Amino acid sequence: MSITLVQTIQEVRANIAAARKRGLTIGLVPTMGALHAGHGALKRRARAETGYVVATIFVNPTQFDRPDDFQKYPRDLDTDVAFCDRLGVDAVFAPDATEMYPGEVLTSVAVSGLCTRLEGEFRPGHFRGVATVVAKLFNIVPADRAYFGEKDAQQLAVIQKMVADLNFPVTIVPVPTVREPDGLAMSSRNQRLTPEQRRAAPVLYQALCEGERLIRSGVRSAAEIKQAAMARMSRNPAFRIQYLEAVDPATFQPVEIVTGDVRIVAAVWMGDVRLIDNVLVAVR
Amino acid sequence: MSITLVQTIQEVRANIAAARKRGLTIGLVPTMGALHAGHGALKRRARAETGYVVATIFVNPTQFDRPDDFQKYPRDLDTDVAFCDRLGVDAVFAPDATEMYPGEVLTSVAVSGLCTRLEGEFRPGHFRGVATVVAKLFNIVPADRAYFGEKDAQQLAVIQKMVADLNFPVTIVPVPTVREPDGLAMSSRNQRLTPEQRRAAPVLYQALCEGERLIRSGVRSAAEIKQAAMARMSRNPAFRIQYLEAVDPATFQPVEIVTGDVRIVAAVWMGDVRLIDNVLVAVR
Image 1: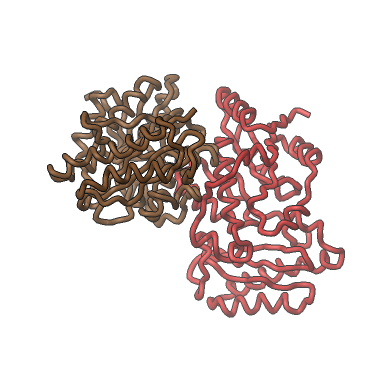
Image 2: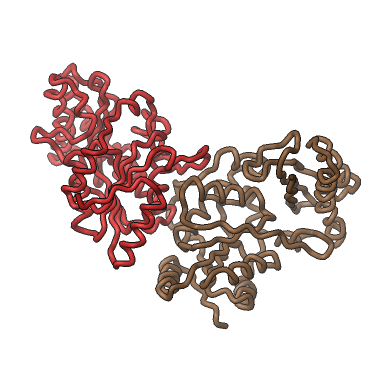
């Protein structure tokens, strides 16, 4: 393998400094591992746009609201590093928890409003944990461009707002969601679905597409759009819907009447697996 | 004048990049202007230790808990720039409020515990405002070393903890408090004291020194130290004591029995002027 695996902050900083000295731009792809084609798209984009690509693999304990979700989160570093190598990633930064959190961490970064709605409401502390660890990663791996998937659209909005508000000198590049052939958004949590749940799972995306179809057909009432999308899922007993909303793509504030671009976002439970997905609908 | 005055983020970043290209290390001295010999010490230290010194002058609205304190805060950019020039500062970054806060700011940085005790308790939101604007400045002016006065000891502790927790690639350099010949700590708020208050003001430092003297004489009970220091000030009707505590220098948690280094910290009102001061007592 030509890829470099580093586990300390000091070492990854030295690698970045050396790459900068060679005149290379730096691309950062933060992940929690359990890599799939969705992450592949981030890395391919980073590879195409920057000279030195660093993927981080860190299952960040502070962004899990449920300890069991943290415990069950799949981990396989060797497979992940081999995956990164095949995609031409230059370095994987995979610190352990004590490297990232050596003592008591008192500092946190929060994005008010954005951090407490929808995902933030159902996963208390989640986005504070995300914003804080991403701020750390931006300081550890000073990149020119950082790549985040649109699948986690609210996370993307939180990070974009944090970068703007705190003047982080990095360009955030959103990368479209990669889907299975049947439409299910790629997620490391998909592997925890039973075969039966897996067969039903694409209905989540179909419901969002139903909402999109209504908007394209001229419907502007968010309540109507929401109702139609919910109805599409309610017919299937495999789903427990946690939320489904039409929101402003930047602020994630709910929209009542569609007057511009909206994102239709949803979270569902299938058994003990929580899935999220969204579609962005551009409205002229 | 050979000093450069810049008012935009883009321009200061270009200046830093040019200095880096010349192989210079960067020193940052964040201030709110109204510069005095205390700031002078920060700048002299930065000048001695780094190749390109940037002083920032920004009266940050988000760290004032009282609007009248923000309104009354002295501002005189021309005098401040001339002062920086005499001290060999290379560039002054003096943005206006819309440059620093162009839209609604939703992101904040907080250091729990440290942000809400003592100064934080009496000035709600103050340290959140400080931590957030300093995080912004670190991202705008990527410096090797940043200089902060020990006069604002709790602010220094907040920033040191933030830098450690969020991995900002900057070394924080604490600079000892500069005092008037009679012992009063330099502060831009001193100019708002009446002549009578000004004559009484050094008693604040004398009270802290009384606490230090007790520790050096072997006293280890914080209550006793505190009582003696308070007594020193209580004799003078010019003071309303807000707090006086012996605290751990890093965590600002109160100390009951002195077993290691402590900082004796105090805040007082003299009329409508609030003064703070502190002494660090090294204990073997």
